[in-house]
Length: 371
Image 1 (cartoon, rainbow, N blue to C red):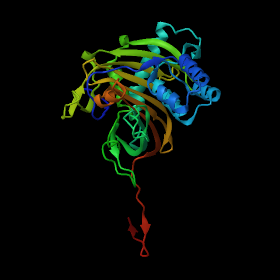
Image 2: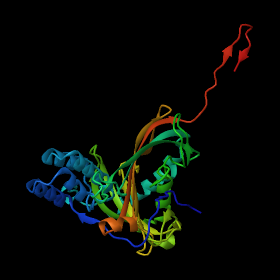
Image 3: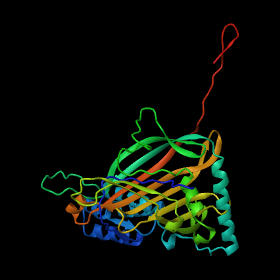
Image 4: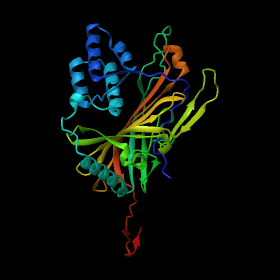
């Protein structure tokens, strides 16, 4: 049986759930313009931005333009960069999409078949290898104000940075220690949000659960290098899902002293970005369809793949991922009246190298070999 490839964990959440405000990229620009006109401070703008989500992707090109035009302060710029990272789950604004018509049904089916062949074959020829996972973690857990008479602030902020080793053996992802770094758990995060499965397993689960009939054409899209991508959407019902979500831990009420664990196999939906020329999967997004009665309101992940060199050969491996989790927190609600706890991890995968051992043969003075 297929098993889930991504696990998200967060500490001390409780019921129920409240959504963040959702705006378009154009509305974001309008807000920045009006904020400058109103002479809001960098801190005030950043605090408001920390409470919103984007319904569209803030691409690197648009982010660069907005930063050049608005000249944000350091706190605002960090929030804009975080919004851009989280928005990778969403499609770009329509004005940024190419105008080419959708392919015919036969071409669509050919693209889907090539992606399945790619996932079934190409991902299995990658050798055993090691890599480094670099994680930037952000959350909105309360931070104490410098003014002791002022409430703690609730806004998205940098929490920590970690580096951990990843080893992939026989197609399975396992942890690996780095010299000078102590890995406190599977992937080096001692608390907060963590994810894994980016090294092919999550893709195998999606394509295993999704039938050809459940993959629907969404759009053409170009990546940052200008490559044309065919984007298909999918939606997997709970009855067909092999995607497992683990949460630990949460409280069921403000006075609940017990930390509870949550494990479920919900339905999920997302998109698959395919290079139509060869079937390579360039990017995937996945968002769990969680119930309002679940201890969390949102669990999502996006993985971007690229070409890396391993042992002198080029392979397709994950280069970047973003994980998102949201849930209700009674302690936060006492402060801001909303109670939405948010965690975001930006992850880069670097330093790929082949896993193996080296034997050195030396010759002694009498001509015998020494290993």
